[in-house]
Length: 242
Length: 78
Image (cartoon, rainbow over all chains, first blue to last red; front, top):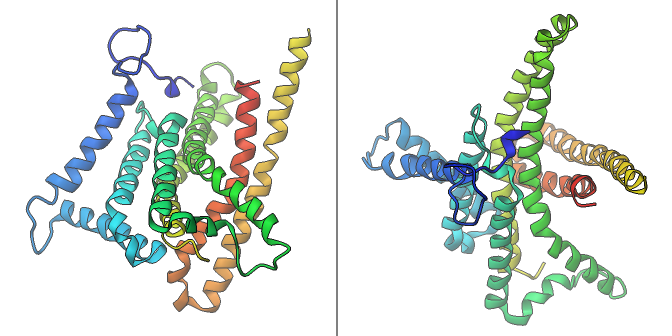
């Protein structure tokens, strides 16, 4: 599982917060790809877009529509934040699928930073917009009065569990997918040491191909789910009344 | 010896925590299955509900993720 190891890029001293590591490198590559697609790719501003520009426009329109549908029209002010998150996660996930690449989103430190940023900013936004009225999010008016304290308790717990599930979902999916590929890659080398490999090796190579295809799908879907959950949390902050 | 037993317990527990994945699988399958059956009854309304389906999947999956979290804690934190 050495694909998940964080190592310094130069030499092998201890890793401090300022050491350039392979995480730094692959995050920089993701940012560079985003810049290439969204800044350099749309530089022409053509009326009839070329290929790169139309991909950038599709991505922009996709996220814009998602924010509008899930979080509502008044959430469009926060669209750049969600677009940033989505595009960065998509590129990190896809770049991580390249052989020998490092998947930055397979580390809890990376995803937890993003999830906590969403959690804190959404909570602050809710209190700034509604003051103490934001707490009505936990007080469900439609429920019978006797049930409301119990529901409020459950709602508070589920509110504070949000950043946990938000970050671990992305990290778990990325890490588990890569680990499964690694396990089958271990089986694939069996032909070198044992004759049973004649049967196992082709099967596991087929399995790697299939799981790789699945992971390509998962890489996109998890970025989509991360962005859409951000939209849901944003909607709760803007409209705490159910 | 005692440490060995604790470690064995942690590994067995991590394995048992993986049964939670089955629950998440049932939940996610239920959400998607109902989405498909609804979409086949009324295909024109299907496209507008994909986002809802993904939100539902995410919430159903969250509890499966907690079992993964428990397994990770048992493996590396105990």
